Length: 339
Image 1 (tube, rainbow, N blue to C red):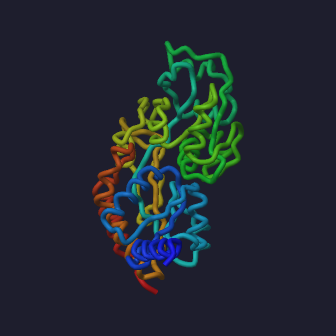
Image 2: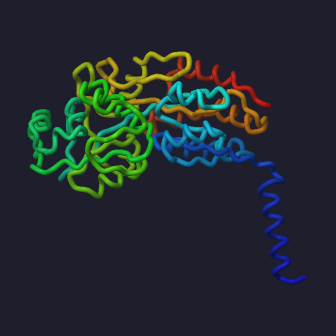
Image 3: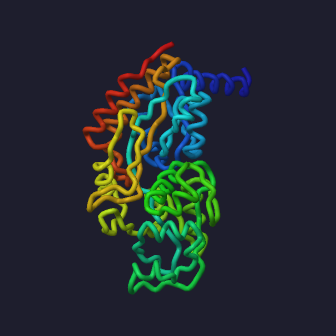
């Protein structure tokens, strides 16, 4: 027998033992970049719990995740903005919103020395509206006495893709600025008055790091991983709050959460609440036509909402509080497996 034939038989055997012979299932998902760091951790850890299933997740933005779950081109979607009634009506079956973790959207920037700035909502909104254009503007300087601010232009950076991070951010701006609410509004994608667009949280982070004078918003973990400065934001109680799992948990504790789990938690009450925060959802069909995949999805979701939640805080996300977690586990139990 020739060496090529021997190698061919060996490779075929490896494929058999590593793939179909073990009955490994691949679950495909797509959507939000906001939870990508923790979802990647979950998928890696779950492979140790159940080696028979692996997850292939593409972080393409919440808008893309919603579109793909509607078209059923993925087994699950992911979004940081709740699906609208209009989008839900396009789906061929009932889609469930499964909250997983909460996180902070932070203001980050590129300044000499990268000081920790203090900013209120109207100032942030006016920067994104283009009515505040200089770093030395009195609205910024007045909140940051003693900080040396250059007399340079502010270079706004925003998301160019449909984004749940943008939904959380624009939802917040709509609550703190009547001009933003009437002129731009809240959505996963909006017509930005000024600025440069970048794709994904990682794209915005990179653009800000490369651009002196840049100013933008990303999910907290991206700023932490890239050692970028983040601003303290003035909350509804009048306190400047740093983004952290604890301040996001404080915001989540005040949220009014309906039965379908579609809710906003921006600009909440509470002395210690961080004001630009949101929950992220996995989107799954209540009726799972593929029994094998449906069973694996339910098993994974139950693991994620129990064991997986313990991994949230080390990655700068806030785990769901126990009462909400119990509600979500009951919703997972309503998923119907099989055609």
